[in-house]
Image (cartoon, rainbow, N blue to C red):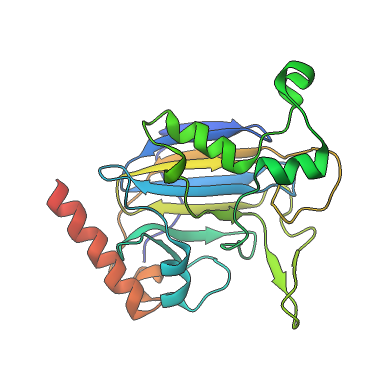
Length: 246
């Protein structure tokens, strides 16, 4: 079985995304993306698009339905809307991540924190997840329509019997990490702002450390591949696409 820890001492990327900020980069197939909640209580809204064809992107519905999941953890996969696995979740010290809470927008944050702008608040001004990812993807020639589904890493939403939802408090401790393996060449974008279900209060987003290392491709006995027949087919589809693109 493949060991999930990257062995290369020189990372492809090593940085910390400040709270409230956004990061993006092309990520090659065969990379391990390690995200670490520095202080505890972080939220990292992550989306991924296929680098060669950004119209193929992470799809929440196609991720949850075949795996029969309402939360994502180690052994699960993030599917595109074309049935291919974009990312495999290979390590999880948090204990589950929210796939359906989505992104906050300017209207939500104006209601929660009041109107702000850079001129008055400087780097302390709030930035919504939707607007931040729109700006970030524009750096890669993409537009507002390309901001799709996200996974809110380090956060978990509980659903009560009556259907009401609530963000689980204290879910992610300081130092907890999650590792995702890129199964295709991707464009990955991450916004480190509060979860849309976060309680009202001061704007205080948390930082997330990021490290990207090369990693071996999934073996025949990889836990994600063995998780369910759909994952085996999804990885096979990604592997075929990678061979055809080589």
